[in-house]
Image (cartoon, rainbow, N blue to C red; front, side, top):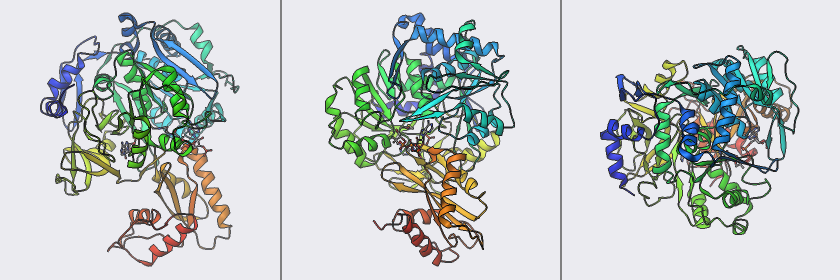
Length: 632
Ligand code: COA
Ligand code: AMP
């Protein structure tokens, strides 16, 4: 136990001393020349001159240190009725063999590999095998449609792709191979090879000369040793939604990432090596990268790979069963998962069936934890419930309650205080730092701490434009919020076109791009409207071209289907209203913020810049017909 304020102060005043000390916990082939390299501002790098291998730190090191027989992964898959424990020794064997297989396909340090996999242990094997070779993986969430996968293939230009014959989503079996083939057809870049994990539920047809069977490749491969990489070499790219249809390729380095993630396991999550740690997310998201794969393994914990849902696989007791059966100490998931459980088991009858006495704390992120969900979870569990705020860009939490240092009193609705290393400020549009209770844009004074994105993949300019130029000297988070007089930070939502649906980050701009291609559509806007279950849901407002004779109901159905096919079911795009025109300013800017307030039934003032105030009434009427704009 320590003193949060003191740890935070030191992290900001002496970043070199602070992170230099944290880096001693990692195994290096060569120590760094500089902890914080600020020679090329506003680009900052951590641990320049250092050399390491992330996979070595996740696996070999633990086997050499005596953890060989400890479980590294517990795979619990209610959807296939499978439970499997993989020890550190077994995982090292699988990873080094698979790395050998990739090597035999010509994958070398610096090459990119795209991974499109369901929640099976082989997804982790694939990621770690890339890390072992110094190849850069880019995992694409399995819920994205072929077009989204194709966009990422064209940006990452993988030498090899790794996928499976299918994913299993609750009761649905989703064949992945046809999606992969379609994505490769759509993409300009073609990978030389695809490695396919054949799952028993679905056959996969392999394309001769290009596709290989995972098992055959691994069986015939020579185990590959770890490649030495620079601390500043990329470990992975993870694409995340921005304001347009072109996602941002967040780059993660090896050194800073290993140091920061290792540090969080004790200071934020308060676990010990050997403990069972569970992030109920998906490897396709940043939470999965950081807290299903890298952090727990770097730290010598057992990680759970859960292929199921909080409800329906088979019931709302799934989380409690996993916690009790596998001795989970800490669970990390999205608030929406708890809302799903609450909806089906508000009295906690399923919770009472299980002994979860070893469980210590619940961590929530992906969206704000609303006070109702907070109170329900905390009353039900009688343990700390910690909301922490973070982004794909940062890899770990920007604000949180650092239980391993000092458990601060919780204020429901707040993500507590800035993480050590993050000098969080609330700014006015003119870059003035605002005082308590004044809402503004949330920014972080540079430099960002280790593990945060050093840039975007092959796109320094977009990195500068999106994050550093809006408020010079600061990293622009894209969120708005305020802090109170005790320094607690409250995140209120995005200021851009990014929305969060069931903890999944999506771009309304990307949905608009899809809708705009429909032949009957003249103009459209998609916004995120509040939803009691998923936090937000996208709602489309569509203006039809003059003289369109097609049945509006049919158009609505087609638009829903187009978003589903081109972005994915994960977009949960189901609501479309057809309107005569969109409300705009006199200069032609669509008034999305005002429309969002109307959809939510919230108070709003008519903007002074509006071209025609009557449009707002039209929008309200149209939204009412699809169940929105109900006065609160
Ligand atoms: N592959 C293919 N399709 C997928 C998918 C995947 N990996 N993941 C989700 N989908 C589909 C779902 O089947 C659903 O399809 P449908 O419209 O045909 O029903 C659609 O995408 C929307 O999925 P989702 O938003 O997850 O809704 P849901 O009703 O299936 O489940 C929750 C709701 C709350 C149970 C679920 O979102 C959840 O567990 N979320 C919390 C955990 C989490 O994922 N957090 C991420 C960041 S921490
Ligand atoms: P992602 O990159 O998918 O992790 O999404 C990041 C975005 O999700 C942030 O910019 C926030 O808008 C939102 N978010 C994540 N965690 C929280 C939280 N604890 N509180 C409020 N918003 C959050």
